[in-house]
Length: 274
Image 1 (cartoon, rainbow, N blue to C red):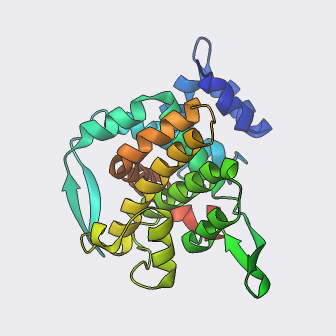
Image 2 (cartoon, rainbow, N blue to C red):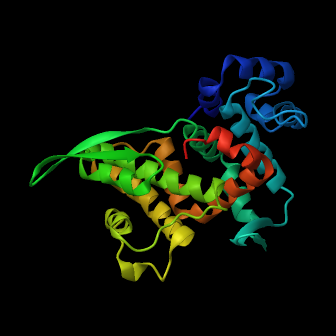
C-alpha cells in the first residue's frame, strides 16, 4: 500500500509546510487540506499570483489546482473542449473524469507530471554510425529528439524513456491545447511512428493533436510492456501509467480543466523552457 501523503510531503518545501500547518487545522489530513477552499484562496490569491506572494512551490500550487479541479468535477455536468482555435464545445462525459481523479495515486501522478516540466532536461548524446560517432542533441520537450534515446539506451532504461514520451504528449495536449503540436509527415514523425509500433495505415488521417494523443497512449503502453519485458516489477506508478494509457483522453481533459481554472495565466512563467 503506497502512502500517498508521504509522496506529497517529500515534494513540499518549507514555506509549503508552514502554510499547510496553518490552514490544515486539527484532525484534517494533508490530502483533505489540499482540496480545501482555504488553501485554494491562500495559494491562488486574487491580489497575487500562485506561488509568488506566499513563496510556495509550484508543486503545491499544482497539487491544489488538481485537487480543487477534482472537487469541481464532482458537481460539473460538462467540461469544455477546444474544437478549433477560439471555439469550444461541451463534453458531457464527466463521470469518466471523476473516476480518473478519484484515485489518490492518479491525482499525484498528474501533480508530479506538471511539476516535472518546470525543470526540463536537455543534453547531448553520441550515436555510432557507419561514419563514426555522431553528436545528437536531445530535449524532453522535443518528442522526436527524446525518441532517439530509445536507439541508444539499454533495455532496462527504455521504460523510463517511453514513460517520458507519454508524459510529454499528455503535458502538451493538456496544458497547451491552444498550441497544437506540428506533427504531420516527415522523417521526425516517421521515427515517432516507428518507435510506437504504428504504421501510416493506423493513423486514420490523424495529424497534430489527434496524432499526438494516439502516440501518447501508445508510449504509456510501451512503458509498461518494456518494463515487463526487462523483468522489472509492476510498481504502483507503473499501474497508474497503464491506466493513463487506456484513459489518455480523459487524462488530457482533466489537465485542460486544471489549466483553464488555474494555470493559464502563469504557463509561460512556470513552463518557460517550452
